[in-house]
Length: 128
Image (cartoon, rainbow, N blue to C red):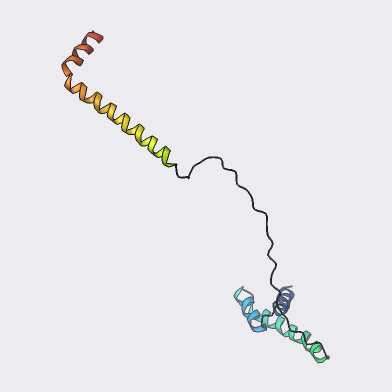
């Protein structure tokens, strides 16, 4: 069975324009045993010799370019904007919001230090 597989592969490779030697090397690199490859090559040569003794048409194999199968382009539906660059307007708005909150917090902290005694009196009256 292996010999038939190799024989079929050698026939196919030769029909595509590859040399017998290169085909044998390819099968050897693929892991087939050297003896099996050589037996298949001998069989192939024996099959081809009777065909060559007959006056045959000398056809040179010209490989045809492979046809590319074009597949339709699949449209991708966007589910979220993850990974997209935010627009400059959004970046400016977020920056302004953070700066505004920072100013409010710093102002609150400064007023607590300035009016420390008043804040303490207010909290004492509130909780006592």
